[in-house]
Amino acid sequence: MNTLLVPKVDVRRADRRAASRLSWLDSRHSFSLGTRRPDPANTHHGLLLVNNEDLVQPGRGFDTHPHQDMEIVTWVLQGSLVHQDSTGHSGVIYPGLAQRMSAGTGILHSEKNDSHRSSGERPADPVHFIQMWVLPDEAGITPGYEQLEVDGELLSGGLVPVASGMDQHKDATAIRIQNRHAALHAARLRPGQSVILPEAPYLHLFVARGSADLEGTGELGEGDAVRFTATGGHRVSATESAEILVWEMHAAVAV
Image 1 (tube, rainbow, N blue to C red):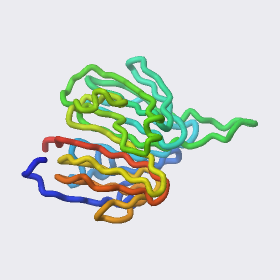
Image 2 (cartoon, rainbow, N blue to C red):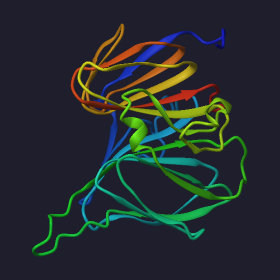
Image 3 (cartoon, rainbow, N blue to C red):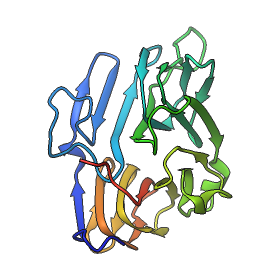
Image 4 (cartoon, one colour):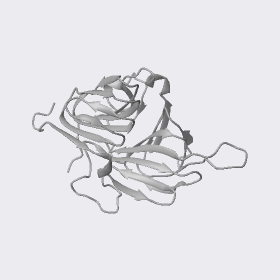
């Protein structure tokens, strides 16, 4: 643990997030990157620059657009998201499947809710997902793409590493990100189940669905987040069925 850091537990409630709303999109931003009104006091936590919760209507989505020098992890909560990119990769992301895109020297991609309403068929559904960005260890890497099914591991009820660049997760079921100081864990918890958070200089806990009790802090609702600095080891207990995402980070963005 970095002794120069001051221990802190910073709770960020769901209703404090900035929002972007269009006819087809409801997006909630934990950090200010890409928002209309950037907040210099809310640019990142540790290595995490983006934690967006998006709801995209059927048949709509993000048209082809560029990214560079970013590790982008997408986690779907409901529905399915169609990915296509300029390196020739394509795929459908759904709950329990982790996806990573390394933007590297530059990549173009699109993300669409390919669900449509059609007479006699099941009604189309919105797609609800979390997209998270961390910086890579090095700029200018070759763009890449990976997706991996982790639904079975989530049945354990424990914290499951789903995206990691850390050496200790080399043998775990996890997609690889190009940052050796960061790992994303997920857990699906039934009421009363609990997990212990890792200890790290920086942690980011996000309640993606349901509600939970954080030891020493109290109730967290859907969309709430907690930013931990120089601490960890707290117990998180589901008060109703919950899904949580936890970034463990052993470095921070240089400012």
